[in-house]
Image (cartoon, rainbow, N blue to C red; front, side, top):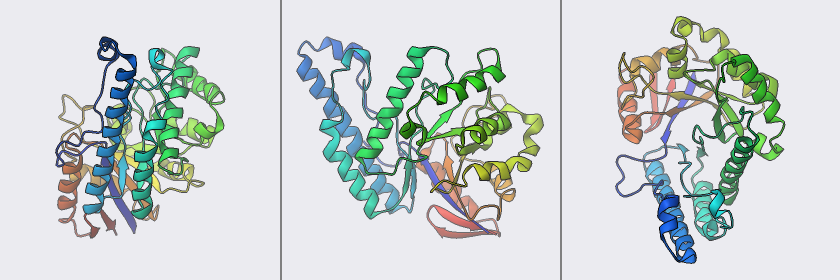
Length: 323
């Protein structure tokens, strides 16, 4: 038996006017002649984004959802070279503390997945420095919410740069340049174009970092190996051996055969069950992050569809047992 808990990404399609990703471009910022007023506008947008995060968490708890990925676009222009004098954490202290209070009152797993431009295997020093700054911002947000920072931030390994093996070794080399508190925050996933499951396992085992298995990425990347992921599953589980958190995976479905890598609006329940049948009993609990276009609506529909399987025992609105 394994307990399966579902989560979703960043925003709700059911909750109105609750975007956590409202933004302000540098061009818009520059047009405001009063710099102090421009900074204050950035602060207002950031606070509103975080207030909407709190609304989203309350929506989640009302629907039994205890697993959620925050948007990485909470603070517009954070770490932008032209706004580096902005101490953006100060005005966010109160709302971050409120979010922390709510998470303490309603225990849940929250994390981040920074955008694809956050690269740790680049050979360019300026890209590595910017990546470390961005990861440091994510860590500051977690600290502001009083959320334990270990294993809370998912990254891809990065680009192949015409030599996959060298790119893997570059990641391992660059990882040593990352401050230890940020290293401890990171977990890695297999991608759908460059680094497959065994590549990711190689890096994770070398660095003692947990691996987030993305099932859709695996199917998209190496369809000829798609049936073989089960033989590496125990290695995936082992990467989580020293983590305080349950094993995590990503689930999404192809939009269609022609656009196999693109994410569909909803999750194909048969595809999800194919995965679950391969891991029953291997872990006491697994947290599955739904990466579907319809966000929480996709979660609710998947839960409804799970009810039709005899081996599924529903626990609540966002979790079940598979036997």
